[in-house]
Image 1 (cartoon, rainbow, N blue to C red):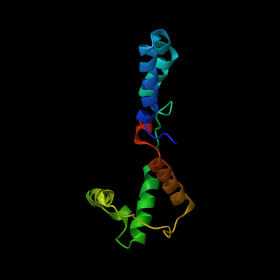
Image 2 (image 1 turned 120 degrees about the vertical axis):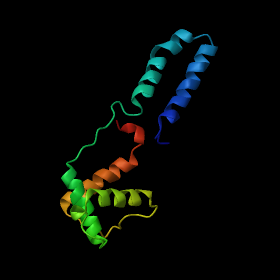
Image 3 (image 1 turned 45 degrees about the vertical axis):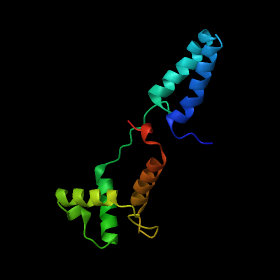
Image 4 (image 1 turned 90 degrees about the vertical axis):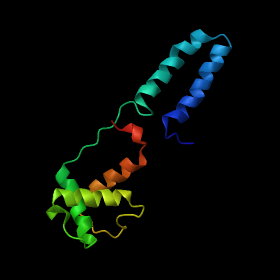
Length: 127
């Protein structure tokens, strides 16, 4: 099974730790096993937190392409307040924002692919 959350990995380690302590092997439990548990607690399932950055203009290009495709206007031309209102509304929605037939340039596809990968990772991978 694929582990996607820290607790899925820590739970069996904690069982091993308690078992070793109960059997009188506390020196073994407090060695490498405890070190590993501390590392997992600190860093999660990845050893470093990911910091994803892209130029904001690329995101504006993608959102503009989406709003034009949906025929609701140009995201690029909207004032900040309307942008935020629309984004919050879409984030609350349970339906997909667009389908596979959204026309994409290479740059738009790259940004969307980045977000797709991000959506597949556990949220505790980011920091």
